[in-house]
Amino acid sequence: MTVNAKGAEMGSVGRIEPQAMHFAEPLPLTSGKQLNDYTLVYETYGTLNAARDNAVLVCHALNASHHVAGVSPAGDTGWWDNLVGPGKALDTDRFFVIGVNNPGSCFGSTGPTSRNPDPAAGGRVYGADFPVVTVEDWVDAQARLVERLGITKLAAVLGGSLGGMQALAWTLRYPERVANCVAVATAPKLSAQNIAFNEVARRAIVTDPDFHGGHYTQAGTVPKRGLRVARMIGHITYLSDDSMEAKFGRTTRGASDNGARHNYSTQDIEFQVESYLRYQGDKFSEYFDANTYLLITRALDYFDPAHAHDGDLSAAFAVARACRFLVVSFTTDWRFAPQRSREIVKALVDKAQAAREGLSS
Image (cartoon, rainbow, N blue to C red; front, side):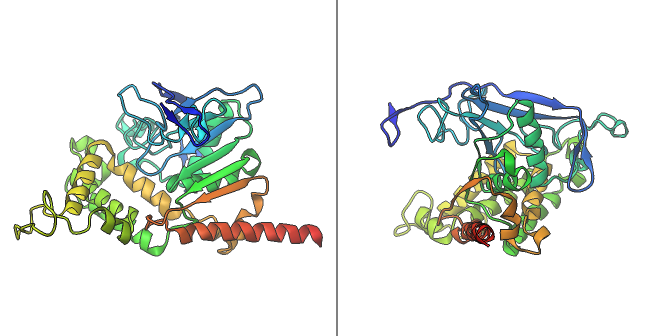
């Protein structure tokens, strides 16, 4: 038996069946295009109470999906299963938890691997023709699903990394429909360096000979080489120099560094960190879609709520007066380091201070 800090028993939500919700009404996109006739796949855990005020939305990051907790029909455990369930932080005896797969993903919701409904497409999948989507577009799609479920206000929205950006966007686009926001290991926008890493990863994919301009499905290929390299680049940015040193150091495969003999080869895997990166790349290339990777990293690049306020993040958060925030960061995260969370906290504190001064004047 596992118990939480209060001594309560913690359990699993058990076997979970994904659900699908179809939307015939077009979804207007930030790009000026629209997504027609789309479907969102989602899962729910716990029970919606009579007042419909105990719903919590969990937003997924780049390579995750709607499967937040429990065990899927395929036997996979949810990516945040340690957080969601009876007695856990998101206690499903108290909360109705929702996980949604965003449009453009490759885990069931309408995306590049879905059939393009445009008659001119001749029944082919979208591929590279899937429209560019942003964090704001995802939040708008989520808001429609939440409304269909009969929920007018969420008890909380939370997510990590790209999911944290979505949680922040909820408080800006639908401030009266969110009571609490939990943003974990995220940022108010990507730095130029982070955008550069994303671009290198994208180039690895689009220059793969099997990419075929994004229409690899018709060509009967999969750009696995590009996906492998893209994922390896990503994993380097997820760990700080110190955490990577602590995790791998200069240890070679099958021996400590003290007694290891090198093969002196440019091709062999000799160091543990090399083995780790190649394993992560190989695994990723077997289940993730290349066009989805391009779309989601672009959504990361575009997120910048302060842009419409001349770079003033406090002004951007001025609308989020009805929401409380919890901002969490990790010193081991290089891409979304604690100083990025401090930017968010400072903007929120400045916003609150300005509001107090406005009331006292």
